[in-house]
Length: 219
Image 1 (cartoon, rainbow, N blue to C red):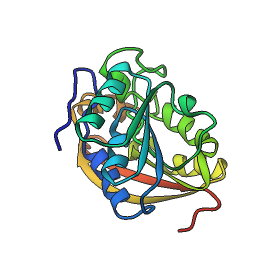
Image 2 (spheres, one colour; image 1 turned 90 degrees about the vertical axis):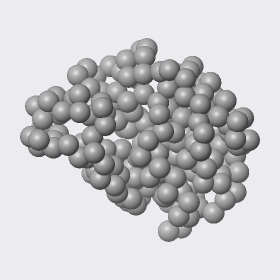
Image 3 (cartoon, rainbow, N blue to C red; image 1 turned 135 degrees about the horizontal axis):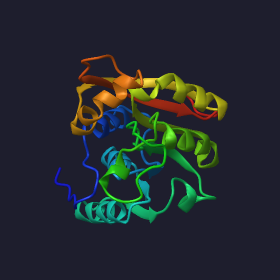
Image 4 (cartoon, one colour; image 1 turned 180 degrees about the vertical axis):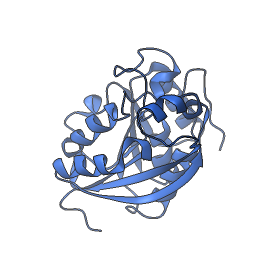
């Protein structure tokens, strides 16, 4: 699929492909209303899997513009809102949340304000956006809604499962894929080793998709 990607915009990668595979496997039959907070990839995954209506949310102007252009290019039903996580959709509820948030551990806790690094920097432990997103799920999901969140193993899948449980959702890992480190992970390998997040010489990470189900959702 042809996707326009201006400079400074996250490139859809294998984590996005894993999300699309899970959605197409039938997390919930379309039509559904989906919201996708993050750097554009989640919106593409939801639209590509056949969601009838997708609302994409992104803090980056460039990413929001790229999502809007690609939606028009492919005639996808995607509404784009610029803002922080769920703030632009406050008061609305969706059957599905699809998220590919920044989750790469960084040297500092505060995310980059500008530049493409804001698309992957997730704070020192990679959980800065993951924890905020997970805690906000009950406010945007319908009573029988579901969320799909993709992340790296280095961020701790158990931490996400625990966060979902604390928010009242049932969490489960529904997909895994081992992929070689990309340029960012390779550049930060020494940092990750020093923090005990990877073992010396590691050059492959496991990407997981975690599903969170609201109490009314049927498995």
